Length: 373
Image 1 (cartoon, rainbow, N blue to C red):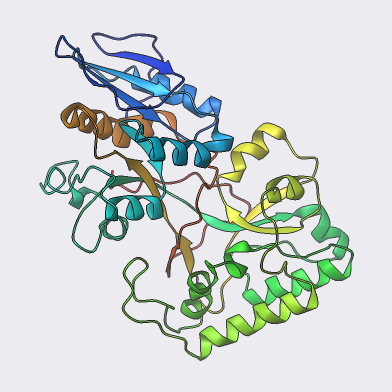
Image 2: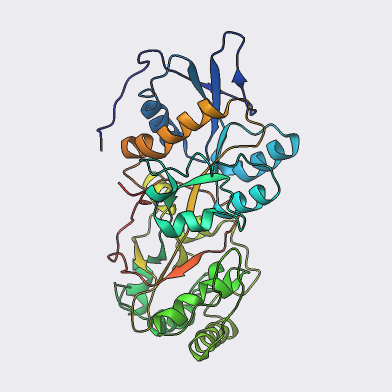
C-alpha cells in the first residue's frame, strides 16, 4: 500500500466540494465531473479529499458533496426522492439491495465480470455474494467491513466487582454481568438493539453457531429456509429472561442517543460496532472504556456486514464514475483510512453471522477492506 500523499492539486486532476447533490456528468468540452457523497466526519472527509488529489485524469473532476454525517439518512432519502443522487454515495448493503431491486442504481455486474484487479473475484467472496441481487445485478461495490462487539464501562465493572470482558468470554458471562450491573443500580446492564429489534433473529444466529447449531437463515437477502434448533431457542430464552429481569433493555428502547449515554456512564454495556471509536477518541468520555469481541458459547462466532459505494441509474458518465469508484475503493482507503472511522447507521441492515476468530479484548479495530489486497 502506498503512503498517504498530502498535496493540494496534482497534475490534471481536480478536487472540489459542493453543497448540493446531483449527478454532474459531461460538460460541453467533453470533460466530466463526478460527484461524491459520504457519511464521514469532517476529519475523515478531509483525509479522503487529500487522498483523492492523487487521482490523475485531466478529463475528470471529482466534486464531493458536503453533507453533515449526523443527518445522512435524511439527506439520502431526500436526494433519492428528488432523483438528484450524486454519482457515488456511501450506502449500506441493505440500501444497495433495495435500490438495485427497484432499478435505482447502475448495475456494475458487466464491468466487474473480468478477472482483473478490480473484478468481482478480487473481493472477499462472501461480501460480493451479499452485494449481488438474486438475478445477478450489482448496484455498488463493498468497501469496508464493520466489526461488532461489546463496548463496556471499565469503572462500572470494577465498582460491581465483575471482571471486564476479554477474548473468549461467554454469553452466560455477559448475561450474568448485565444482571449484576442492573442490580448495582444501572437502569439496564446491557443495551443490545441487535438482539431485541428486528435484527434479533439474525443476530441470535451467533449464539447458535457458537454452540454448534445452525444459523437462523440459509441466506441473509434471499432466504429459502429458516432453522430454529435447540441451541437457538436456548439463546433466545436467555435474552427473554434478561429482558424480563430488567438486565437487558427491552424491544423498543430508544437507541438514538446510546453512544452519548454510554459515554456519560449511564449504559455499562453496549452492543455496537467499531465506528463509535472515532467519536470517543474525539469527545474523550470521562469514563474508562473498552471494546470486547462478541461472546461465545464454545467457539468464536461473530457478525459482519460490508458497507460500500453506490451509483444512481441516471449517472451521466458511467465510464468516468467507474474510474473514480475504482480509485476510491482501492487507493483512497489504503491512504486515508488506517484508523477507526465514524459511521452513523442510516439503516440497520440484517447482518450475516459467521464463525470466525474474535478480535483481541480492548482493541478498537478499524474496518478492514472487503477487497483482497
